[in-house]
Length: 235
Picture 1 (cartoon, rainbow, N blue to C red):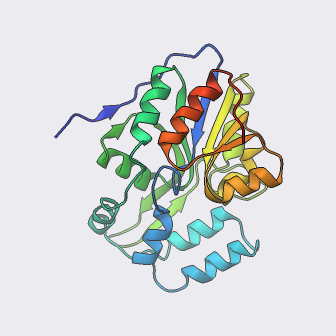
Picture 2: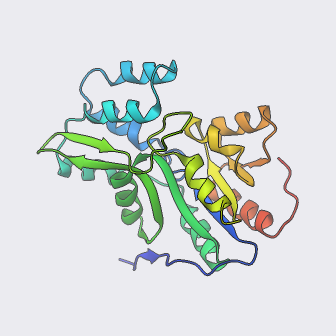
Picture 3: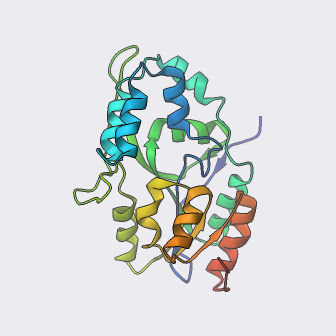
């Protein structure tokens, strides 16, 4: 087996760029949290999802209530995560960012254990991960905590991506945000530029947010290099 790809903290790039990247559906091929719920959740998680979709609860509360319905052992969890695929070009994207001295952070409203486990299985280590924290209560019960929630988060997310971005903006860093879905809508207009997949493309187009669509991290790599180099990228 080959050695893991370890990404140490990069040197500071001249233009102060930072990349913040969503995980579920962006780096991972499928939404990992949804896949876990489909496989292991007791009845009721879809109703909780419907309440979130209707705007009755925030995503943070939605996730905590859904995770409380999971019925699985740690062995079952890790065996299931072993089958989750990531974009095959993500490792090259991360390596290119490091070579350019650009910090790459994973910011996710998903589950930290799942992200760390999946990246490790694909031999990627050393990336900063900001996500909800999974806690095992007993052999088959779990709960979720949200160490990166924001008290003023307008979407009541478990991980406030806007607050995490604002920390970089306060230090005059430029943020390239990479994402795909609803949990990325709030933060998109606060980034200096967005690489968008799926529903985030339409959101950026409707709201006049500077962005470029991409299908895989092979596309994203070329777009990232153009953006950081200051080239004009058409949305």
